[in-house]
Amino acid sequence: FGTILGLTDREIREALPSVADFAQLTDDLMATPLKRYSEGMKARLAFATALRFPAEVVILDEVLTTADDAFKELCVEEINHQIESGTAVIFVSHELPLVRAVCRRGLLLQHGRTAALGDIDEVIAAYEPERHRAPR
Image (cartoon, rainbow, N blue to C red):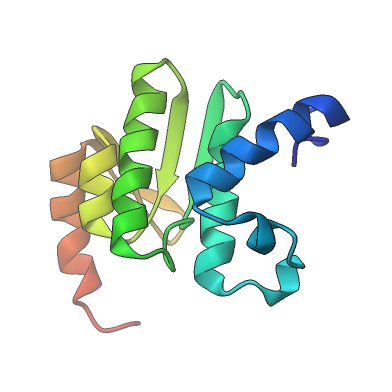
């Protein structure tokens, strides 16, 4: 991921302890091949990696789906810190409590078209009836 962002090997190596610490992964787990990680561990690592490298815009698409509640709470704090620091965050999720905790504005897409755009509470209100309708 760091290489894609144009970081040097040194910058990546220097960031690894911070990534591991945020993801709450021990040195043994960091040495374990990714294919042996649980979905929750992969989510922790992906989120920690995404937010530990500098970026003007961060896109988070359902990254916390398999994370436990304690880690989600930690992530919400970090996302809000990123926003306060001036990073633009695009947060995609069907978990409405997370959306409310992170977003001030929202965009609801239905069949590829804008169904609602604006204040997050208004967009969530437009989304909630759609969730309970039978699929077409």
